[in-house]
Amino acid sequence: MTQITGNTKLYGILADPIHHVKTPQVMNRLFAEVGHDGVLVPFHVSADGLTDAVRGLSAIQSLSGLIVTVPHKTVIPALCDDLTKQARMVGAVNCIRRDANGKLTGAILDGVGFVEGLRGAGHDPKGLKVILAGAGGAASAIAFALAEAGVSALTIANRTEARARDLADRISAAYPDVDVSTDASAVAEADLVVNATSLGMREGDALPLDTAQLHAGQIVAEAIMDPAVTPLLAAAEKAGARTHPGLPMLQSQARLMAEFMGAI
Image (cartoon, rainbow, N blue to C red; front, top):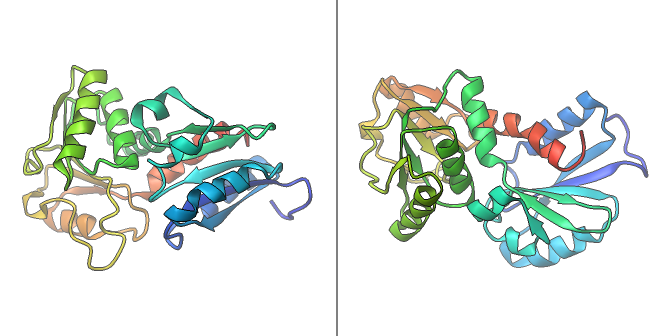
């Protein structure tokens, strides 16, 4: 894209905070590469303003889609007119397509993007034992995608045990061949360690898992994109583990988002 005109399709990303997002850079670069006349801009929207923001944006006829991130992913499904099967199963949305009549259809692409990012870096999750920190929108999507990818075992570690158990039960029901637990202490037993919480985005955040258990036989992966090296990844490097940053997840799902929103 070299110039915004009256024909330019509009896209937005909803987040709170917004300063850390990398999606505008990645998506606008993709639009330029494929020759799509569109622009994605950041919208800083707090939780109490989300409903009004979505209602207003849905009335903009040149708006073609929205991307949704922290902390709105698990709340925004109720503001959509329809959901994909995966979004309904996960209970979260991170990408919305606006049809010509204003209908909003929500999808969840975090998990697929995360798994594709792993594979692109040479880390196939099939058959691995995984511990996943988090039980929110992104974590749920990643959990379902890892189960679909054929992991042998999946441990959900979350500060609120009830949320971890709820996600574990949903994974077990959908993928009965996966050994699912909520034992947050089992970090050392995992082949793949994943942080799908927001812990690590802000200075002074607690660590999402017990890093003293990390070792050289593991892959440690992040969903956080900024900072590129989180305290968890720094601890993993110190322990000799292989590390996988958060940006490949976004890069992998950018094309999926663009396709879903009708940009390519």
